[in-house]
Amino acid sequence: MPQLNDTHDPKLTSWVTSANDGQTDFPIQNLPFAVFRRQGSQEAWRGGVAIGDQIVDMATAVQAGVFSGDALAPAQAAAESTLNHLMGMGGQAASALRQALSKALQTGSSQEAALKACLVPRVQAEYALPARIGDYTDFYTSVHHATNIGKLFRPDNPLLPNYKWVPIGYHGRSSSIVISGQTFKRPKGQVKPPEADAPVLKASARMDIELEMGVFIGRANELGEPIAITEAEDHVFGLVLFNDWSARDIQPWEYQPLGPFLAKNFASTISPWIVTMEALAPFRAPFSRPADDPQPLPYLSSATNSARGGLDIALEALVLTPRMREAGAAPARITHSNYKHAYWTAAQMVTHHTVNGCNLQPGDLLGTGTLSGPTLDQACALIELTTGGKNPIQLPNGEQRTWLEDGDTIILRGWCQKDGAARIGFGECVGTVLPANA
Image (cartoon, one colour):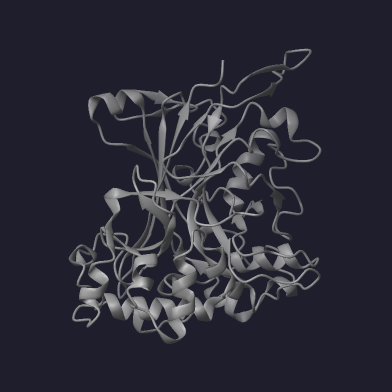
C-alpha cells in the first residue's frame, strides 16, 4: 500500500499557477494520467498528466529529455497511446515517474523552461480510453445499495445470505465502456410488465444511473497464482469515476438465473483521469465491520487493510436536463456519497477475484458497484432515490425525474479533502442519453 512521501507535502506549489488555487482537482499533489490529443486534430493519441488547467504532454516531454534514470522508462511508457505498459510496470516505476514529475513541476524547478514547452491547455484536449480494457468485472460493494435494492424486491429478506461473506461480482462487457463526454442511445430489450402474458421488445423507459468508482489493474498475476490481501494494492494502478448506466425495466426479466445482460452492457462511462493509488495515500480510511456482522474470512483480512483499506473520496451526481440547458441553468445535484461507506475494499475485490487463480491483466477494470451511503439522500441510483419509481425527484426549475429522459446529461464528480493535505479530485464523468434507434 503506497505510503506518504514528499510528493504529498501540502505546502508544495507549482510554477503552473493554476495548480495553486486550492480548488482545482489537479494540484501538484495529484498528477493523474490520461490519454489525449488536441480537439479536432488528427494527432496521435498519447499519455498526459494533469497539472492545474494544463496537461503535460508526455510524448513531447520525453523527446525534450526531461526524464532520466529510474523515471525514464515509465515516462516513455506514459507517452504511449495507451497506459497499459505503464500500468504493468508496477508501483515502484510509477512512483519514480511521479517523483520526477513533482520535482520538475515545483516552483523554482530548473526544468521549468523545458517542461513549459510541453504543456497543452486542458480546454483544448479530447480524450480516449486510458487503457485497452481487456476485461471488466462489476462488484456490489455497498451494503446500503444492496439493502435498498433488496427491499424493493424482497421486503422481508432484502440482503441475501452470501452478501456479508463474499465480494459479489459479475463479468461485464468491456467493449461498451466509453470515455466521459460521449453520448449513447437509449437501449432496447425485452420488457415484460407484470400483467402481461408475454414480453415485448421496446426501448427502455426506466433509464438509471449508478454512481461508482472504477479500479484500474496495474501489475498482472500469472494464471493459477492468487494475489494475497497483503499484496493486492501492488496490483492496482489507480481509480476513476464510473457510471454504469442501467435499464431497470429490462433488468428484472433477463437477470435470472445468470445475472445482468442487456440491461447493463449497452454503455458504461468512465472519467478520463486516473488518480493513482500513491496520490490517494493521504486519504486512507479505516476498514471495519459492525461487531455483529460476519468478519471477513482470513484470506480477505489483514492488519493493513483494517487500518487503511478504505478511501475517503467524496462523490456526487448532478443532472442537466434539456430545459435547464436551454435556460443556461447550472446542473442540479441529485445525490452525494463517499467511497468510505463501501462494505468491501479495493484490495478485497482484487484478492477475491484471483483466489481461484484468475489472472488479471494491466488495464483490466473493476467496478465498485453503486456506492450508496447509509441514508436515502446518499443513494446513488434513481431506483433507490425514487423508491422504485414511486417518488419522483424534484429539480430546482420545477421539473421532476423518476427515470432519465432523452437529452438528460449526468455529471459525476469526486474529490478528496481534509485538514493537513492538499485537495485533489478526479475531474468529471459526463454522459448524455440520446433517443433510441427507430
